[in-house]
Amino acid sequence: MGTSSTPAARGVEVRGPSLFRSDEILTPAALDFVAGLTRRFSRRIEEALEQRAVRRSRYAAGDRPGFLSDTADVRAGDWRIAKPAPGLVQRIVEITGPVDRKMIINALNSGADVFMADFEDATSPTWDNLVQGQANLCDAVRRSITFEDPTTRKAYALARSIATLVVRPRGLHLPERHLVVDGRPVPGSLFDFGFYFFHNARELLTRGIGPYFYIPKLESHLEARLWNDVFLAAQEELGIPRGTIRATVLIETLPAAFEMDEILYELREHSAGLNCGRWDYIFSFIKTLREDPNAVFPDRSQVTMQQPCMRAYTQLAVRTCHRRGAHAMGGMAAQIPIRDNPAANELALEKVRADKAREARDGHDGTWVAHPALVPVAREAFGDRMTGPHQIERRLEIRDTTPAQLLKVPEGTRTEAGLRLNVRVGVQYIEAWLRGTGAVPLYNLMEDAATAEISRTQLWQWTHHAARLQDGRTVTAQLLEQVIAEEMGTIESEIGAERIRSGRFPEARALFTRLVTSPTLDEFLTTGAYEILEETDR
Image 1 (tube, helix red, strand yellow):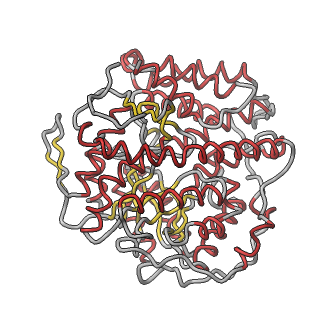
Image 2 (spheres, one colour):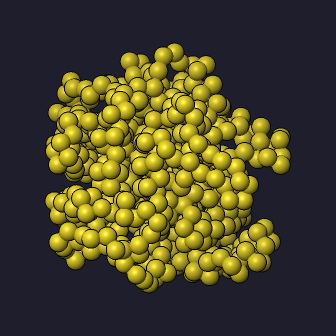
Image 3 (cartoon, rainbow, N blue to C red):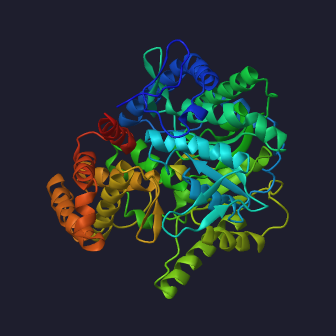
């Protein structure tokens, strides 16, 4: 693998190959900026990950997440976050997607209020995806981004009115080994945040908005404090006014659900609210209570927002945010149009309408969709139930949320059909990810890393605890391996033998099998998959 020709500062090594426009992104000044953040914060990121391991050990021994006694004064205090920033006052519909050029244009033109450009769950972190993604966002900020489809020759460009751009960097756990500082990989979170902020912060300010972010997978308010310090350092280094950065935190881990007030407090001058990242939250629930035989989940399709634990979690988010003057964003509608079946498509849209109407009634200030076709559906559902740009001043009349409510395990059944669907989704998602695609349409849903994580952790949990299916069979490693073999045949019948031969299915199948039958649960499937990406690069 060749390396970039970009000259780097002392102690900085670019190990990724030179690509189209990489010299525009990996400039000496930008590299020096990201290196400075890395030297200042990489050890704190490592310490945060070490604390996650400590908590895992406690939970494995029978402890459970709970509200913190030493931050009770924060929860009881009378404080509010900063007022909404320009471009983030109305967020009724937010659309999410990867950072490829066509997606960025379509999302910004979709009619949504906000587009979250995703370097995390919807992007496979190939070197090409990361560098080109940064270049695409630079063009989007400057409104110069265009695209011509090589197959249809259709041209794409930005409309006059576009959504506000928000960027989601990778989580704290992911490294970026194509860039090394002082002999160690740069944290992927600092890579994604740093290059976007360096190249675009001033330009965004001249256009009347600012550098806005979504922060994923936090497990504690101390991790929010870490990000706040990153924001302060970045603004100071570039001479950007303090408080310019705004960040919405995804409450998508079970431990973080008990620290919503504290997370908002740590980020209060940079906060743009909280989001109920429902898919990762389900994944985290399974992962956090992995050793508890009484916490085995039913089929993923049965873990709906009507389950008591999910209701408690979202209502707590709304109540907490509104008390602090913050937006409380709803969860993702992952449905995509079913173009060859109008009846099935209308049924899917009705599910979206009902879900978004529930969020609006509950007091959410906006919601997420995965496809432009769902933007008007979600907007109508909210428009029927709220006036004005948000519902921040609305207060929920509910009792205090208890740990028991948040920790109530969803009820339902475990079925052979659910097991087989988990296999097909997990294998096909990993295969696409290894080919460089992080958002994959499967079975009329847009699957990303979060939904694939549910599929594989659920199967691991069923096997680990010898759970019984509805038909009485016990889920074992042997049964899973048999089903995986059978479902590979199903996948081949669906997509064709040539697609199987030309893809990366042997590696995906091997990784998925290991993930669901291992004695211990891997924290993230993307960690193991990243090792395979690295082997491909080498």
